[in-house]
Amino acid sequence: MNLSRFDLVTLALFVATARHGSISAGARQLNLAVGAASRRIADLEDAVKTPLLYRRASGVELTEPGQACLQHAMRILQDVEQMAGMMSAYSSGTKGQVRIAANTSSITQFLPEDLSGFMASHPDIRIELEEQNSSVIVAAVAENRADVGIFADRTPAAGLVTYPYRDDELVLIAPRAHPLAARRAVPFRDTLAYEYVSLPDATSLASRMLEESSRLDRPLRLRIQVRSFDAICRMVATGMGVGILPRIAAAPHAKSMGLKLVALEDAWARRSLLLGVRSPDALTAPARLLVAHLRGLQD
Image (cartoon, rainbow, N blue to C red):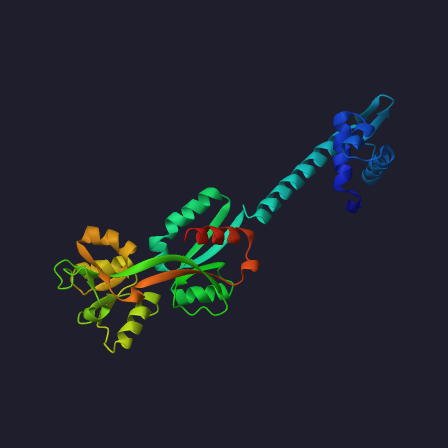
């Protein structure tokens, strides 16, 4: 059997003819000439090598093979309609997946609420989120291992197109009995007399602290390095040193652990988090929708 002879127009015509009991009625539904419709039905019968219709003066009636053909034709047309609907959803951006690589600051402070709002509006778009250091995020986007990156400013991002995402403020965290805890604000220089609890060197926050201490020609007295904001707060609470974290991320820990948040007077303590993509034009429709959503939150 030559499958190329089964085209969707002919199957749709056969279904319409069976429903209306007339080839001419089926032809009208599909905007075909009656003669052309008759030839299509005849070609279909020739392809399956059996009559599908009883032709009478009053119209047509399905043969037993015609009944079986009708069921298969209806199923094929329904599958094609579902496929078309799904492809339309993908092309419009209402269905699909977006891969995001984001730093700890964005995940801790902003992304849960921001992504929740987006996913409520686009329930068929799946988000794949990976937490990484800012430099690793830039590499992941550049190498097409992530569609969208969220990282700290000052991170080299050659080859990426970047947009502002959110601003955050770095603050000093200290035990309430610490000498700096009584101050409303403090310059970073004054904190360098004390031991620090910090994130690993590869993180953008630790890199920024080391860069600024070097610029001041003062050593950063690292007593211990840990891998999470929560761990920093726990270590500070036990008197292991002071730390620097984003205010929004540190605030819940400060309340529960009896810590004091002290503003930093230095300009570098006001950071911007950036969105980065390889090329806006190359983004998938779901990724474009997400980037537009996240950029809109900056306003």
